[in-house]
Image: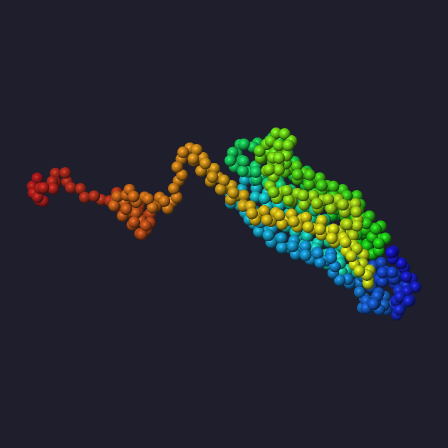
Length: 451
């Protein structure tokens, strides 16, 4: 029902100074509000204000103040905001675990590469927390204003953020496979071949599509989304804005970015895992070598993109739409079910999957150190080199072949002053002064006898 001007408002606004209303250009509307274009007041029941002849309102309540009780959008918003906020803690733990460096940094494999996925997940969690909390004001406001804009602003930021998190995870998995190969044989992989050129341009192409999704959906004039007072205004103004060409283009740019992620995964499997000839064998190889977490994460990301495409064409399921509420009537919010099920749940599940696998997986530097130890042992076995005994083994068996004098020196070194004392004893014995008899002196000749 469209808004109706009530020019003769004596019956509706008893006690109002009609002269003052006309002088200050105030108009009453059928939704029980009073506005002059810059200010808006509620004019029903206990919210009915008092207007003075100078245009001052006493006991006035703004149209954009909380009035209704919290409903599904606000309740689910609180729930998802808490879940996203809790995920920040576990994301930070995994960031510290996998971002720590135990080996010298290499120019080819920098530690920042394995941290980016966790940085993007922190960004998505922050956006989800803010968007869920603002949903409380969307439910409670009598007329929509900045709250619905803020909720959708951070909601639309989640899509490029979760795409970037998935991309960085897939890209880094390929980089990790390359690092393990290069660590075993530094000259096994060239940098100027077709593989290297693809890995150079793929990030640029992905972030181009991802940025275009952000550019088409987020930087825009959001003011028309607030105009959802009546059904006709909602369909003509907010509906046309929510389904314009920019939202449609942004959704398809997100789909193109998802395809680039899929191609990057296929590229890493092809070059860093076992190569199979034939389409069917290649497909089976990809299924065999692809990590399980990507089988879970990428379909969820595609569900979120499919919902973005659907909302760009169907305004009735879009989070930009607000179910208009009428005082005294039952409220049935069907939009919140679509928005939280298909809009908030996939990013939250993606973050949860990454957190679980991040907890199960070990730091890559530690894994590489262990691989180097095993590789060294295998090389020693091939060359028939006996493994080195531990230090305690040497200390326990070194006394078996010692003379009593050497065993005494060893005990003195352990009890006395350690190695410096041992060196001193040895020096005194080896370099000490020795008594030398004259050449013509015999042990059997009496002392003092003439020669």
